[in-house]
Image 1 (spheres, rainbow, N blue to C red):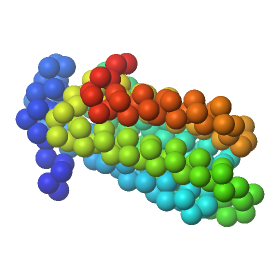
Image 2: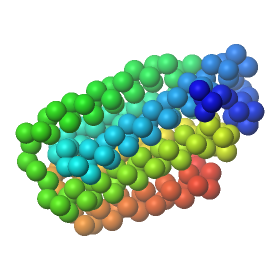
Image 3: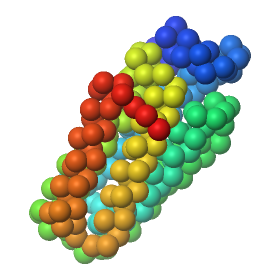
Image 4: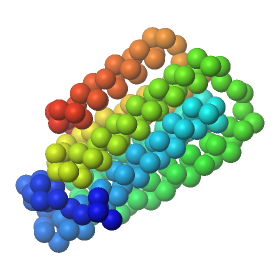
Length: 196
């Protein structure tokens, strides 16, 4: 696929981190694939939330799985790019969590329109942010260290959102706090000012 071809900038970023050329050739397409898969899965979650097919407790399980996958990616990028293969297993767990949540939510309490709206906005922003990170990595605008820091922040936001959803309906104060975290993440992705 055209978008999985490593760019010179991305290879240079990996080289700057001290990775071998052979590792670069293997890692960059794997990274681009994983980031693209993150964005695709997050859009799937957003679509399910928009249609009212995910109840909050089940959405919390999905966000926890996302946080684990994103933390794994960040850790692998920060330490050992070859570890991305292990992260692929976490990505598969994330996909299974989405499917399980969809099945379990069929019989759960229906969310109010306001709860659904909040969850839809939050999951859509997660999806857009994952898409921006994937694009930045693919074009070489974001290096491996920046992607690792951004994925760590994505995981932190998903973990916080999961905890809020597990506790029940999200309050206005919680929604505003989550919105602020996502605003900061938008800025970090767009400007490349990501730090661990």
